[in-house]
Image (cartoon, rainbow, N blue to C red; front, side, top):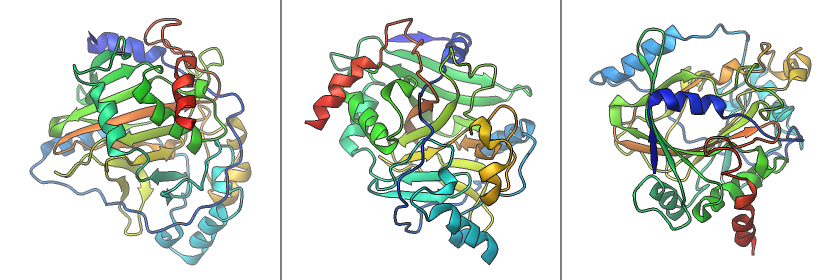
Length: 354
């Protein structure tokens, strides 16, 4: 297993870009919508680390270029907003998903948490055994086909010399057999994408209250999201591999609200997948269809600023698996040219279908 410094890590991460020909397609039909399992952001007076992340958040706060968002109908401030939320969800092709990769809304346990921008979760996306197998790749007890795994200790500084991100990341190869269940389920959830739309899988560990990830956007800068590199990140799939029984560790969305006006917060739960869309296609920037239900302006980078989010420091060790979906075919570069190929995963995925 190789280990890199944070400076080299930053260089590697800058090389990681894009994927997905024909990924922008209408979604499947709307699924039933039970009450979501979410919790508001709670402040622990004894945890000064949360203050640190909030300070960092304000120092990096982006200008808000939007006038409204649409929560779930039951979280709407008035009847008009509730009706707009319902209209954005309840058709065979939900307007809230226009311009985004298709989502299989028949997926078992799939729930909407927010309508515009869309935020969804899928409980039991991975089994406890599948989560444990992925976490095995962060240990010395590696399976025989693991090959080389790259380990990076991330400590990213902000302009205020405050750590924006403190965590440990493992990059693993597509061809490892125990990675196949996750890849297959992501492809089933997002039926309009191809395997080669995926970035390298990242396994991330946060070691308690001193580690977390302050407010950030997942979309790439326009200068980085080139066709040669594979295009823009169009979807984020984050899977929690552990519970956070000691509290904390929530994924917080800075500008999205629940019915009591608090930040939308997704609590880690073993096997739960979180899906959201960090960018929009250029045709959405002129307020067209998006304005009909969200009245939103997107800047020239195609980044959806409303998806600014953070990883709250956990009170216990937290593990996640993370995949980004790109708008065209992504060329894996972390392991070196040609050393981590999407096609290496195909046979393992096909075996799961038998």
